[in-house]
Length: 401
Image (cartoon, rainbow, N blue to C red; front, side, top):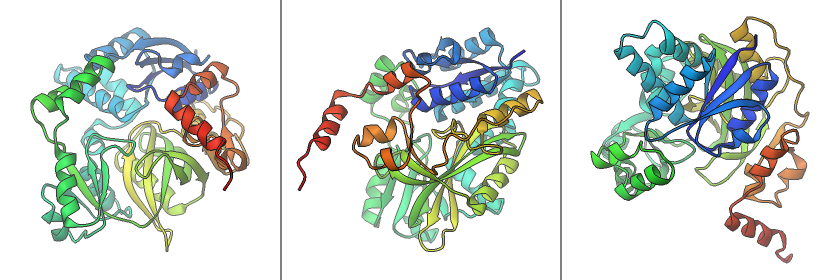
């Protein structure tokens, strides 16, 4: 029988649908708990979908688990991972930590004793440093004066816990800027924003912090001048099964997500990832972010993405195909790696780079990662907001200087 994988996602993110297709091709029955109208429903890879309800997230995920009886869970975003960690703790308090849902979550994500480190930026950076991974100086920041005490100096990077995709990240260049932006990042969510998200996105996770005026924890890191890089790995009980390493060539904005990447081999990135996977006894699919020093190319690990990232569906042969490696470990059989998606190391992610700039040269010089075998998903990706479309057309037809 084919193993059953349940994708768990709280956001309508296209890469989650791409990974679902890759996992189905690797020999899985793929089902999903996700928001309504998720692009995953536009693929031919997913059997059933169950509605993720932001007003009752743990109940909706638990109901999907009960209905599908999956062999493995795959998290599609940071909030989904946080929900699964919370569901584990809830089941553990009920005395169910030895069986059922708790066992499934640990098999899918890794050892529960390290969930607290995965969920906390400062704790993760401290664990990485202790494991011998090169990291920038990092401190949990309550007051701007701590930057000087920790010898971090300026510029510095401030990051709010519980955020991802560049949201909640600010670069500060002096004490005055640090003072102002620290208060902004620490501040509880505005009630209007929390209510809007609850009503229109069915996500109530901001309501409690807003009503209780709960501040966000903020970390500060020393600024590393250079280029961003990212690793995606499939792992099993603390061992890396397959890995992909990329240098970021283009982003939506300075603190946004990547739209163009170049595949690279970087021994220090690979070694750092292996150390953290082993240290945290991780299982499943995870990502790690780095800064590559502009002068030395030294790799500084800056963050963990405890879930599938937007490059996780890409296949580059044996040892570099996350989907088949994960299914092989789950089933105890050898699933042949998928053929290399391209010989071109430069990947223009679809629809991210096309939406950023329809006239981008990377769409022609790189491999444009369009899901041609999923026409309905492709069409869904092309449903851009009118404002983006008009902006793209304006650039296309702008007279030459």
